[in-house]
Image (cartoon, rainbow, N blue to C red; front, side):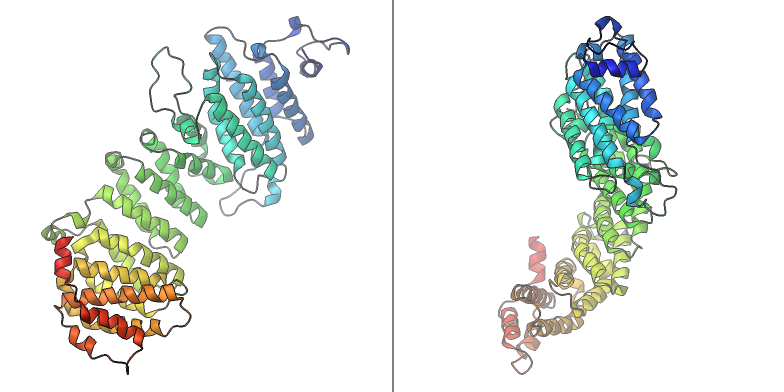
Amino acid sequence: MSMELSSLLHDLHLSPSPSSDKLLPSSYLPPITELLSRLQEKLIDPPSDSETNALIGHVEQLFKKADPNWLFSANQDEGWAELQEAYSNLVSALIGCAALPICEDDCSSLPAVAYRIVPSLAQAVCSALTALLGTMGNGGSRSGLLLALAPHLCVFAVTHFQDQPWTSSSSRAGARSLQEVLLRTGGWRDSPHLLMGDGTQTNEGEEEGKNRGIFGGILDILQPQLTKDLWHRCEAVKLVFAWTLLQVTRPSLSPHLSRLLPPSLLLTDNYRQENCILGVCCLHHIVLNTPAADLRQFNRAEVLYQALFKQLYTTDAAVIQPVLSCLLDLLVVLEKPPSSLAPSSCRRKPCRHDDVLRLVLTHMEAEHKLELRRVYASALPLYMDRMGVAVCRHLRQVERVVLGYLEVTDPPEETSRLKILEVLQKTTRAAWPRMACRVAALLRCLLKLLVAVSSDRQLSDSVKQKLMSETSLCLKLLDGCCHGDLQLPLRQVDSSCCCSEVLGCLATITGTTERCCSRTSET
């Protein structure tokens, strides 16, 4: 036994002090559980930060230099349970040394100075825990011990390998190294494999470890901190929860649904932008990776729908974008898409798709912020596809939105205009018998757009060409809706009204008329 370990045992009053020139005889070694318990007591209430660092260093040396057979010595059955509990308590105490300070309220984050000592302590703890894993290996009954410690180690590593105010480059490197050693020691391929395992059950009496995931164990650790009153008190809890959740896919997600939805909904309902976006991302991942039957059970899908629908009233573009995307996937869980139903059914039964589209179109009409207009315009074509012929219920609103958005420039990429032209094309194809009465207003708007784009020197050639070609396609489709009635007025446009580029576009329309009815029958 090395002199460092002898000194440690003497400091903990577990053995007499050896002489300076002799090593500690093996007969003096106490039970490892007793040593672990004494170390835990000292780590829980250290006198000062410097002594905490020194004690963590002693623990690291213990794991590096002590005999593994002594470190993991235990009697059968009850002895292993006692050893596992002792190691779990010690690891928890080590992690507690680098615990983040608690926020007193949910109004603001702690300043960076509040975390000044955390990175150095976290780095020391990472080294000690990495040494423990290096000594542990993965054989025999130790795999059960590894499986018990892995959730604590993973939560700690995830907390400190992210670029946050409580980390430094050194602590992040230490945390990443700890995660890598954990994966290597347990034989896991990557983080998702660590969380989900192999997806197979272990038969009674078989050695467990490699084929079991630790997702449930991590949720056990996080659950007490993810309540309505406590989740905002530690900045790292929500990040660890979100990181863990986003690594897990079906079918491993569904069994934990009752523990995943409440924290995700709490985050979604928070007034802070970053929390709301994180919550919506979690909900979207749950929707995509959970069977529809499980989501509909206990009215869960309806609860998610109401929470997301409420977010549509926000004016934050960064929030609206993921909300619209998540709602699109959630609506399929709640009801059949209107585009998949017979036209008569669509006419008689308005549904949640209609409610969402109606609210989106209402907000689009009044919106003047370019960033929000881009978000709405980008999401609208997907909703048009989902609605199909049922878009007839919303034609008046769609027409007002199209006319309003095509009149306002959106440099430099003209995202809003291009997406709205796509919306007009989809609407025309789906509802072509109802479009003839709207052609006059749309024709004036599209011709004005062609002239404005052709004379706009700020647009790049590629964007200008894209706008003009999409506008020409819209005119072709409208011409087909009114059975070629646009041919005569378009032929009357000459060089006195517009430039040669516009005339070239109009020539493609008057030369070939695309009938919407034939396109619709083909699709």
